[in-house]
Amino acid sequence: MKGLVAYFSATGTTEKVAKNLAKATNSDLFEIIPKQKYTDEDLDWTNQNSRSSIEMKNLSFRPEIVNKIDNLKDYNCLFLGFPIWWYREPTIVDTFLEQYDFSNIKIIPFATSGGSGMGSIKENILHIAKNAIVEDGKRFYSNVSVDELKNWSKHFVNC
Image 1: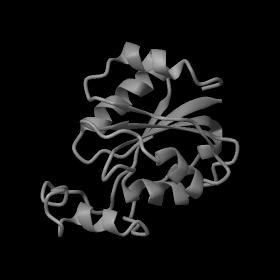
Image 2: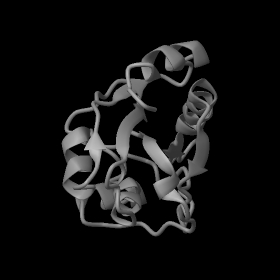
Image 3: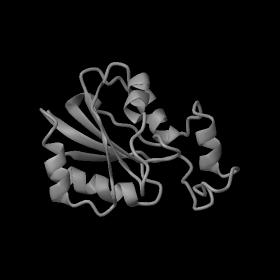
Image 4: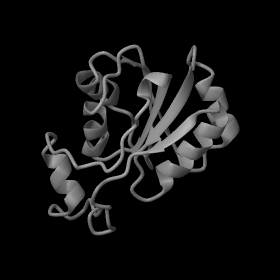
């Protein structure tokens, strides 16, 4: 069994960390790709009418994803990465979580943010991926090194 790093990145920040984490853990990499790409205007959190603001006000919103993992059962660990939006995971991550059965798969969330913490992200993931084993996650800055990620990931048994 091996690990998978699955991530959603709107601006490239989370993608950079995800790629480094995949190197650090010798894991496969999967990008969660939205059907409709997020523009700078969509991501303007100061605009109450921006796409991201609207999505995060309605937590049942589920943006479409264009790709799927065909072989999820081949993995025992899923490092799940995303930017923190409004103190939680973006709703597109919830779309991703609802598409799969995570029985016997350990989910380890990681996030990027300039300052927000992980808040209730673990509980949110457990609520959606009921059969998963969800670990406490960690927030990283974009400049986290491969060595730092390797040291962090060592804490997770069988990953």
